[in-house]
Image (cartoon, rainbow over the protein chains, first blue to last red):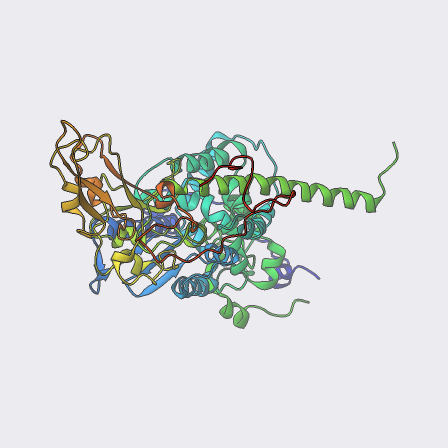
Length: 305
Length: 250
């Protein structure tokens, strides 16, 4: 297998490797932060919809707009939504739930399978704001990791929660999830659950960079498994990429930017990619963009010689 | 030191992994069961399934909390002495006002609040218990506020007359009947004493069980119990006669 990039580059032309230069104007910077801003709007917006429904009586079609929380919810009084991982744990306790939660889990499952499993992590999950802050501060501090953990540990925790649910007779992760604690207490009243979130923050800041989201969180692992079939993916333009590595530098899950695989397929395939789009604006060559997987297959994937 | 054979090394790694998972799992299950043990201190919304099923099914979404028109329900936060994230109400602050259409139960997506509850009067959220040392009525005053405020009026709480002893006038005292008490807690909310003298708790914390072998005359149909034959003494005497009644004529 030879490098397809060299094949496409006109012979004798060595493309110079440029690095990311922050735009000088505020407008330019805001444009570069567009996905970050959109993600925060999305994360806070979801939180606001839940909060507004619970406390200010927001309605749609005469029914509560978005009642509940991220564990289970009801949209406009008619569309059930449920955390599929929590529902799976519940089923494993061998207590038969009502069909509504199963339908809600199915709807969420289909949605995230289409838009990219870990879109949940980067665009909805409230803990992401906490861990992003920790990651940013960690970069500023320049502190090293105290601990080394495998990024596959989350899959072991995912499986362990499924094993323990029937043993304890309770949804094992859902009962101790700092994600649920944070979201629940932000909407239904603040308590000591925020201490657990502070623990996640300190762990990410001082013990292991991207420790929670990138190594431990079984819910993220669950969505990563879904994301393997995801449609919305980050595409790589093989003709313009110079392999400068800026995208890998900012990526919270750098293992997903396997450039050899990305060059072969034309897009980032790993389900661990959260579609956070940090890499898209930072690319000096504008080689990265969101795309649909089907589209990539039609236009870009050619046999690799 | 000799090198560990690869097969043995693989087995050791397998055992290490298993030990890690088992010890982590034990701590995890301990934490979970510890949460579940706090259950007796939470009064659940109407229709709540028995403890084990409720803990398994409640997804902690708070839909019941949003549905409650009186804001009686809340979700337990971490470190409260109640299972984390599960719904409960505190009667002294806001009791359950027993909506006819049971909105909290109807929105429950998992069935932790079972839709098999059709009539709110059949709900058994808890049971009112009276502290007769501090109850005004039991101390001879005319209060009876619990009786008057009870939504299942005249059934869950009745007022009974206790005849006076020497020098004490007769008292009219409230008595709770578990056959009708839903545990809504309106009585506890309305009780005028500084600390409520009537409190709602989970029924099994205060309720006894007499046992089927006690037969209350006049209260229920008496099923005849076969009397075993009196033991016959080894010496061949009269059946049932022993050292205590020997030689005494009836």
